[in-house]
Amino acid sequence: MSDALLVEPSAASPTRRVLGGLLRSREIAVGAVLVLVIVLTTIKSPSFLFSSDGWRDLLLTPALLLILAAGQTVVIITRNVDLSVGSTLGLTAYFTGRLFSDHPHLPIIAVVVLGLLFGAVLGLVNGVLVALFKVPALVITLGTLYIYRGIFLTWAGSDRINAGDMPQDFLALGTKAIVTIPVLTIVGLVVLVAVGYYLHTARGGRELYAIGSDPDAAVLYGLPVTRRIVGAFVLCGALAGLAGVVYAARYGTVSSGAGLGMELQAVGAAVIGGVAIFGGSGTVWGAAIGAFLLVTINRALPVVGISDFWQRAVVGALIIAAIVLDRVLSARQQRRLVAAREETRTLQMRGGA
Image 1 (tube, one colour):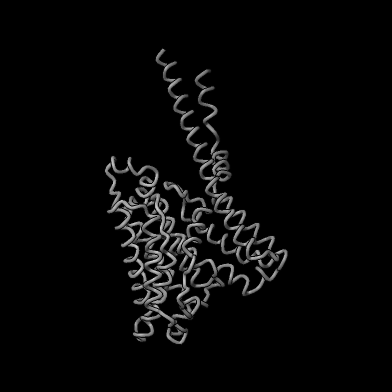
Image 2: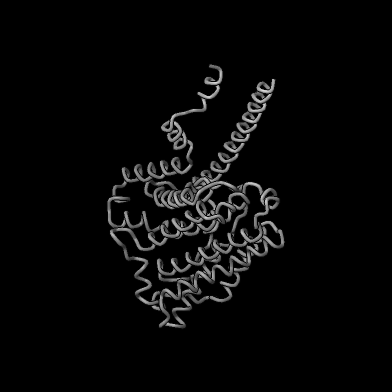
């Protein structure tokens, strides 16, 4: 009888376990806030959603940030951060325009691949400096943010890439849609699925979580910590490069201000979506929902008459709340683990007696 009583509380039904998991899911919570923002704004201004431009902008505008947030998630999971992605995006966008301008007959797919490789090389620089020289990622990527931006400004100068410098087929990607879904949004979703599959299925992806949870234990366990961290930065850089190509197709012009400030939006989207800033947990799906929420809030607040200052304040408050919530949940989980160990030890002692 006593054994049954001990087992019964933990033997929750599958339905209760699923419901409990959904209620604790950060992704579900952030998704609910996103839906609420869309609904309230649409009530205020029906054209926000129920118009061809409204629906298109709702899906298309977050595409850039979605790609950046996916790459940022991979790095943050390892207990690092990449603040150079905005500069990488801008530099790659200009590189894309120059390729089309200097080599008019270059295939579009070749330019996309070269943009990915260009971003990957910039990410490799970050990864090598962080992983091999053991310098904090915050310091390294803050430095490369300014270095890459400086290279961009020196290279571009007062020049800018115009729509006439790029082929119409490439620019059409920024406006084309398939079954009302913009092509660039589909590109972002493909990236999301690929990165999510890697993180949760591939051995390398699981090792990234282990490294972020406890880097010292990962080294003792024999995981290839240095290689995985370098790989995370290379992937983040490659996706920032892809975002640069998407930027060129989306806007048709590239000036020296391209990508300015987007690194903080990428970090904010990941953190708001449940990716722990201290590493080891979070999903790329949550980061994607966070990206959609950030962009949608920026579009929604002016519609309801809120000033630019409060738009930024709301985003800042969301980021702070997400970090505080992570710490609270982490502390609560730690207390539960300690209590579970104590209970197990007590039961073992009683059994031995």
